[in-house]
Image 1: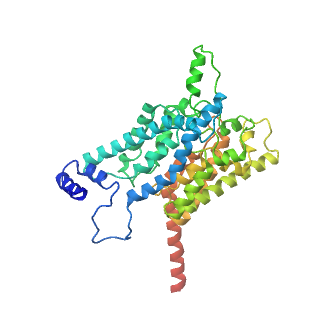
Image 2: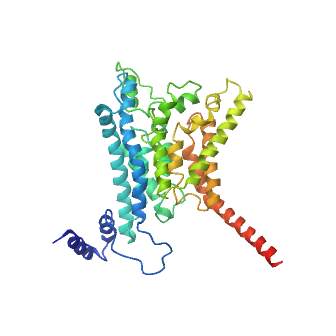
Image 3: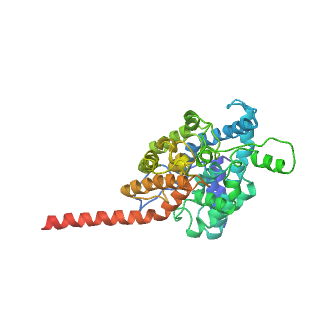
Amino acid sequence: MGLKSTLHNLKEKYKGTKMAPAFNALHTFLYLPNETTHNGTHIKVADDLKRTMNTVIMAMIPCLIFGMFNAGYQHFAALGTPVDFLSWDAFYIGLIKVLPLVIVSYGVGLGIEFLFAIIKGHEVEEGYLVTGMLVPLIVPIDTPLWMLAVAVVFGVVIGKEIFGGTGMNILNPALTIRAFLFFAYPTWMSGDKVWVHGAVARDKAIAAGENLDAISGETILGALAQGKETVYSVADMFYGFIPGSVGETSTLLILLGGLFLIFTKIGSWRIMLSSVLGAIVMGLIFNGLVNAEVISQGSKFYGLMSTPYWEHLLIGGFAFGTVFMATDPVTASQTNKGKWIYGFLIGFISIMIRVFNPAYPEGVMLAILLMNVFAPTIDHYVVQGNVKQRMKRLKVKNA
């Protein structure tokens, strides 16, 4: 009996049962279902939602692999025993720390998706395929696994399923999970010690009386927020050889991922470009205030205000958030004009929060979540504006 016959028999076995959604999800993970729509279609294409999600995952894989190498590289550099970036020692540290984050993220998230599908009797929704990869990439390297599991449960149940599942949520699920972690466990999501593997544990050992050297682990944003000069070059920022969340450090790989999403027509170039423009405008405003000596050098905000506007694009999670989360087709604006407004405000607000919140010098998460809420309103006024313009043209034509 061939594989095709076996799968067909299993499909018939589970057909009409509670387990049918779970089997169909596994069956169609690598194979397209042999079913076609006979009527009522608007667009006929060869792919489906699952293939679209897998395409986004492929765009993030380079960031994941780079993050594994960088996790080990930053760990040994902080200990004062640097190793080559592309070494097994560096990769091994990243592998044993990042892979469990990925497994927990997918295991818990997909488990909840399967559970809801079986209980409610609908097919398993594929939206979490991307969320499951995003979550490990936007958290600190030493995030406790139980903590991540709790956050994933909250993000999937409260952030998505309670609204009706994939396509119905108003907030980006990955950022909902990140926001839950930030507000529920702030000491694990911010500060100098969470961005480099072993820094938190080493700090606790020192506090317990052990004779060890502390690990700094300070990010560029953390240093600039305190008015310090960064020790990293522009090349380090662009290529990603800096501390930070697992997958957010390499602007180069994020840029390549963004171009791939634009090429495959999955990511909106309007949102990406307008977000960059919004960040540049806000950065120029702050630079102008500093240059005009409106803000004194003694101000606690001076460090980030005087940071060159273009440098804001290379540090923190701005690039990653712009490419992979602001462009979420479910929670972003749907109209073309709305995408320009939506993206511009994300970039503008991101830099504003980054500068005026020195305790947590990052703003892209909160900016995207805020604009997720306002996206339907933006689209509403864009559509109403178009209706009014057409009514005016109709009146002139009939006059």
